[in-house]
Picture 1 (cartoon, helix red, strand yellow):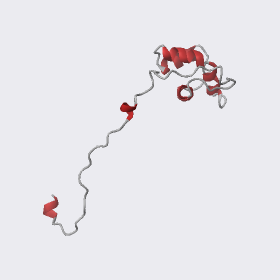
Picture 2: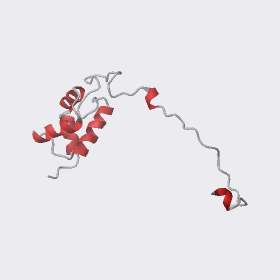
Picture 3: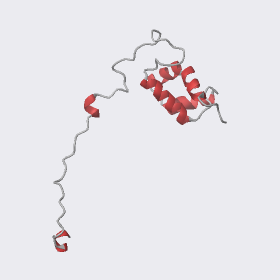
Picture 4: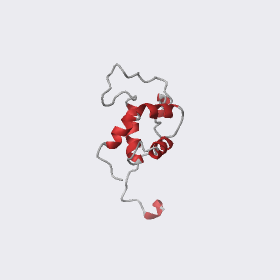
Length: 111
């Protein structure tokens, strides 16, 4: 069933408190979507639902239509989705010595 453009975002914002509670309780996003879909609370595709929930999670569930900055609670600094800086740092792999092309090298030396 086709829905209006932006309908998924409206549905996610309307269900943000229940979605947050379920995520904090450890439910997967797919199971939350399936429950909402069966109850007729969500009509859009899972991908649109997931994208909009992820945007809310990044915003700390505080930014939405009609919410004031004082009514939203700040996100806890030790949320389970935060990753310590050491885990995100990439180690630079050691690189082999640089290659220099020598057109005069005999073919037997290359094999």
